[in-house]
Length: 621
Image (cartoon, rainbow, N blue to C red; front, side, top):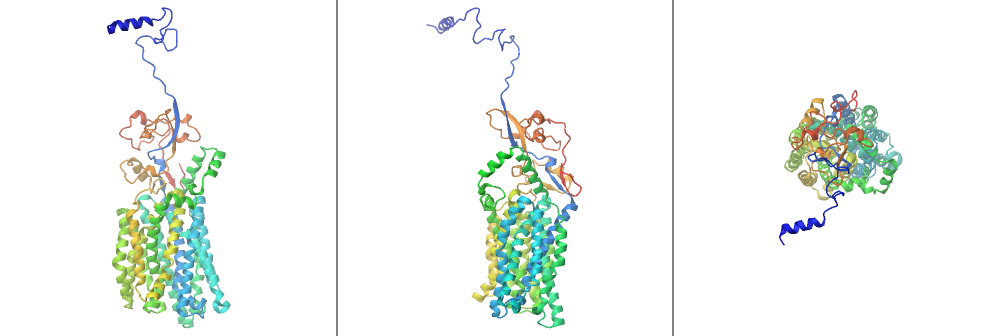
């Protein structure tokens, strides 16, 4: 049968009744009927609301730090590091004298080891301070913890100045000295890690290296000031009361000087504000937790293990163990070289080179002052060329200069000692000039204080703080006076590896933080050029949650910023302020090339947003 005939026959079998509507043709009196030629009504897909992170920066996301507030923050943190290195410095410079005071009756070589062991004990407690004070700083704030550490340090150092000697209470005299050294170590466990976190979060991204370097400048100035006080006290005391004046009580003067210095330091620190990045982090947490009921949040929090709970040390170890290892390697190399130049060098000059006590204490002062003044310049250099090239200079100069420096020390003259110390100061300067800006940038805001507290104090305790003790022990065992130099070069190997694998952080926002700038004009320029800026990665920033609508069951597009946002009056649970701005609401913000004008149109009538200002007279937008 022909195909056409078969079709006709098939149609006739299913011909509907003349008064019944065809099942596939709309009837005029039934829903869905339209006149011939009328436009077909578009189907409205079922929509669902989802939340996602905004993709582009707006001006209100950028933090502008006023210069007056920035200077106040720098002064409050630098004075703390000054006190830390002054306190530890005078212990190192007075180690030989205090050995006679607290360990009388022991052989000279053993008494010196006992005193250096007290120095090491204070560093062994540092990780405990970092473990306790680091997470505390991530929960209650940087400023509160820094004020606490300053108070503990001042009180413990001043108390050392009034301790009884071994002639008064015998061998027990060493016990309270060790106890106060441990208190110093505990407080210092939160001091440097907190101070670097604080100053890095306050500094503009483009100048973080320069401003953060002031922190370590304060450290080495403090060490030089401690050396100068010991040298001046020794000269005056011995000139006025004889050669035994320092042993008979002159050693107490540098410690008691901590009282007026500490009062000034605590007054400055009590007036520093909280960092803008931490304040913004707390604000975001409150806003996003508002999306979830309190009961649901508490129930979910109880089910999360400590390994997955932000604000705990276990969380930091699980999430950031690679960054912890990088920090440990860099800190170990920095502090073995640094403490050998500062705390151990007076002992080395006196015992191994044979200089006078005054010469041993004063020899490092000119080099430390010059090196300290160079640190901001090295930090500024890292803002231009990057942190990694500066670290590379530190590693290379360690292998080139350290061994010849120790050879030059044994000539014993003033100028040979100054030249040798200057050679040792080169790698220390290039390490220290970028440490305060590099190490905090390894960790996100929620774990920065904890990560710094753990990695820095672990490395300093095991390697940096024990370097005087280990160096002296190596010399005693081998008879080789150059062993301290080889000890420094050993850790430079690991620092070189860490430099290769770490991420470059120069001129970029801190992980987990919004950009920080120094002026409104810089904020506008940053937002306007953000697409071309390779240093801006919004995936590493805490971008606000935005409520958008997509068809039910549809996957999110690769460029979710093209999704039309939910109107402001339909947004739920506190997301109203951002929902209507998911399109680029600020005229200075970029528009992606594949974004149509309809998709990027504003859905609210609010004026352009301004950058967040942080200062004494500023208000948060």
